[in-house]
Image (cartoon, rainbow, N blue to C red; front, side, top):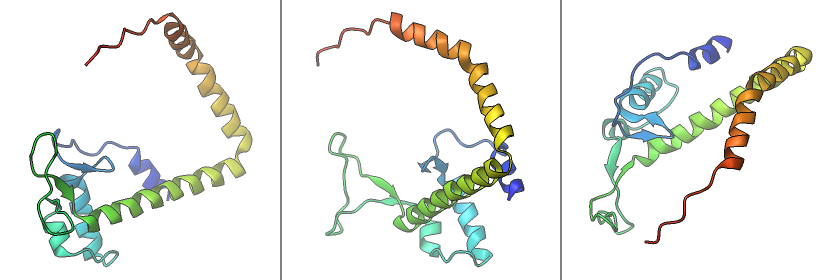
Length: 145
């Protein structure tokens, strides 16, 4: 488990700037390859169609293409099957982070509390400056539309 969390904090690759994302995860360079591997390992059973065509035309309940009301352009969406899996991945990651934190804090409460105090003390100068800047800041007048 610790290796997994260390890997999460390590930058591994650069991602294309304009790639479609779901829950801030790049679809074509991260999500689809990962879920394809999970299928191959037998951990998931995501359809080949969803993995092969992950960004799809959005359609209404009658099957008509949905359009952006402002631009008139067709709306693209992540395949619902992939969105559901990403939601599960996110929920599992949050649960893993919570369990890891709880386990560590339970066994090393003094170390954890000291580290939090040190972090807060280290940030005090920046926090105080930001607080002073906010108090001195004059918001611009709203622009009428």
